[in-house]
Image (cartoon, rainbow, N blue to C red; front, top):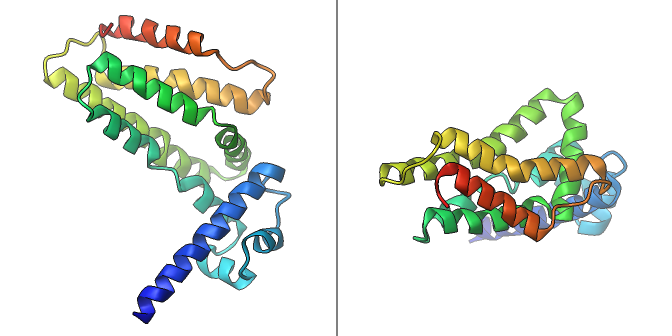
Length: 203
């Protein structure tokens, strides 16, 4: 019972620290945020941060990678709803666009881009645990449709790459331009998806 209580207490403390760190990283950037500020907002102590995360870089890892599997999970959940491939992709596009263009997520992408310049291992782990997992999940979905007799104009891996590229390019543009380039309207996003569906033979 004591061990369970201790694990639960550490989980709550971990969540409070990562929530505070995420908010501060977004508000003022990774470099300008200190561990002391995180402790002040989250409560606890520096010793707890060192115990749970090692250092500020370890804390950034926890903040960035906590959503690593969410794209993969979203694709799996939406694909299992039983809708047609076209309707599945329309719904998936809406959900992924909302997520990828969320201002907080875009702010974190800026941090990832800056961090990746100096840390190739961080960049590699981020790409492999986010983009690659999400793309493979979508590729498996296209392959499953193909196995069920859906005629695709293109291989599953190419279709997955092009479909996700629509969203990722807008996210990266927003992150780099800081809003100088206007985000696409809902109508433009819908038109892009319909163009993709026609090209893929799914309209």
